[in-house]
Image 1: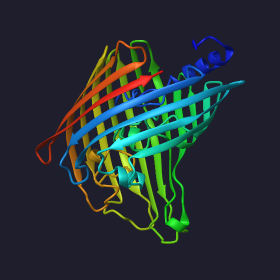
Image 2: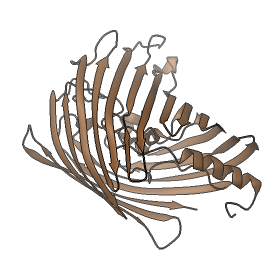
Image 3: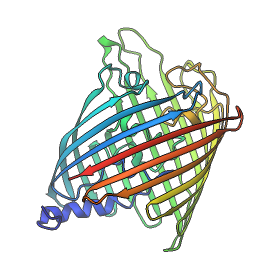
Length: 365
């Protein structure tokens, strides 16, 4: 059905335009993001293959192959209110950590989709399944883009403000339900990203994003008690966009506020700086990552000092120089997009080369 064929679809376009103001983080991850509704019934398929060779105690690397299929129906309720429902099916093969992350040996997972959205006065509230982990405009150090397949759907509450002078995103994500008789811990994460926009011109913009993230695992009411985990990440940075160029620097702090530490580092810090050039279908970036006793439960393991699955597998300091080449190309068939990534890296402290590469194909219809 054409987008503007009915008043319902016109309201869906309004929702999409409001949501489209959110900016991306360190990468253009739009191929992984759950697109805002533009028609009443939408279907998306994503096919992906990623290989990383890190040979690192915290992030040894992995090879994976997978596919996602998502079908969703949207209904405009009037006065800026929308209801969406559907299903995502994912098959993930080859990921060494997928069974631990999912707590299941099966490579097939189903994710129910049900959300209520309300858009009013440059704000949006969403309850149910959320826009996704990569929509929060965070660097990989704090939010790993591998969550696009390790846990592609968030469930909880999300609030966003789209003001010309400031953008705000606050969310609460129930990552795992507590099941006492199975000793399954409750896992909750929450965060706030505030981005004051100091200059906003067509050829130049300047902003200073700050964020606060909390990750909590409960275990006090389980049949077999498990240790409580509470971790906090704070960040502050400066971002400048000049035509096709982006210069960004972020400083991050980590603190483990658990009653009893399950890792050797209570506090640490990290920094991430990059210069990125985007033109047409190509995106190139040069990135410098440093860290000292830093831990981010939702961040990329390669930039952390601690393996969240094996807390005493550690790398105290990080100094990584990384180049990134990203090729994004819409294919001849409408709704089909190809994304190819190559990430050569150099570990300055251990004097070794690392590499990651991926191919992703998205089909929307």
